[in-house]
Amino acid sequence: MDRLSQAERSRVMSRIRSRDTGPEMLVRRMLYANGYRYRCQWKGVPGHPDVAIPRLRTLIEIRGCFWHRHEGCSDATTPKSNCAFWNEKFRRNVERDARHEKEWSDLGWNLIVVWTCGLVPSEREKTFRFILKTLARWEKGAEKRDGR
Image (cartoon, rainbow, N blue to C red; front, side, top):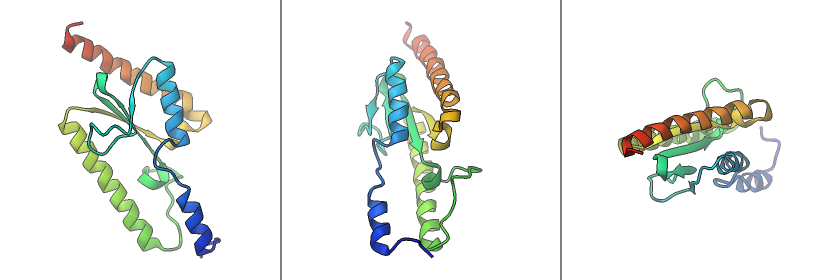
């Protein structure tokens, strides 16, 4: 049973944003501070990924553990009411993620998936180091291919 009335639940759900979220802004600020320039929700790539770094052919997806079903994460809970709706919603989200990942791979894009549980204060630095290390590795590969 939901603690909120249908009108209250509707209001709460309408406030959930799909872009410029707190986790997305954390990653974007870190990228900019480290000299990476990017495009947000770029329409030049199928699925309009959260962050695209065209120079490195790299996409960064910031995924909510709840919405995208981060396996093994305590944040990937399922609501107790209206289970059929939620299970179908989660299934579609995961299928869409897999479809986009395949499209991006087929088009030659690198992908970094950042889960929101990796952006909590105790994990944030580790996650940022991973992103920067991965981008640096791909940057070296791009330089070799371009003959720089």
